[in-house]
Image 1 (spheres, rainbow, N blue to C red):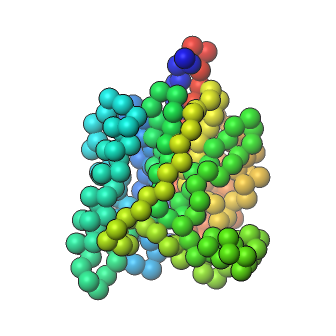
Image 2 (image 1 turned 60 degrees about the horizontal axis):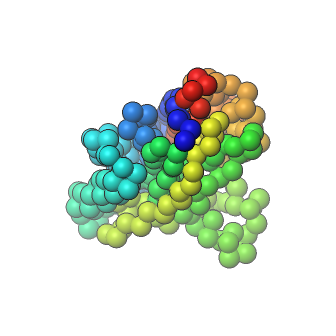
Image 3 (image 1 turned 30 degrees about the vertical axis):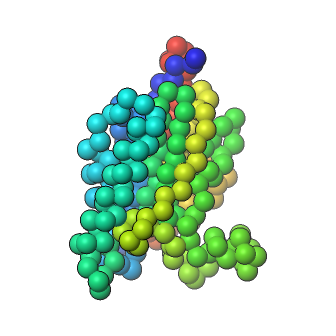
Length: 242
């Protein structure tokens, strides 16, 4: 069995147009846990919601197994969902997207709600492995608009799922084996809606992880920085070769 070591980094920026950063992120390599959360725009206290998710994940003790880790994270996010619903009452919504990467041994799982994304770079190629919970993604899949039209759609910021948005929270999941030299990228839509995947790929292929996250955020700012932008990158290496 290949022993894997991780190198990870995260960075968040308010962007060029917003006064408040409603994004939050988590980097916990010792627990095999990384996350990006984006407070849902247009609602109250998005920064409270995103930070509540990160705080709950940060409080989890590293579990003894992959299944226990997954259960702990699901439970923590579900509890936050209930707390946000109670805090908001009947006339407000306090919500946040969330994308969480978990690693245990040679396996990973990604959990998410909303349009914050998880990508995996393998063999130099970047692939989105999460699916946006958004109005425009639903429209694309129904054939109502093209993927190109979705990129600049006027309702591109409408998410169909978020932590705190509904009484019943549904988290999607993908899981697979990790290969040495895999790189995972978690980001808020402040990156994915501004920086093309081709440019993301070039940056991840060209720089060490700590510089790559800085370059990715800089690219979003150079693109106008219309939203908060948050990036977490995680590289897996053969521990015996490091």
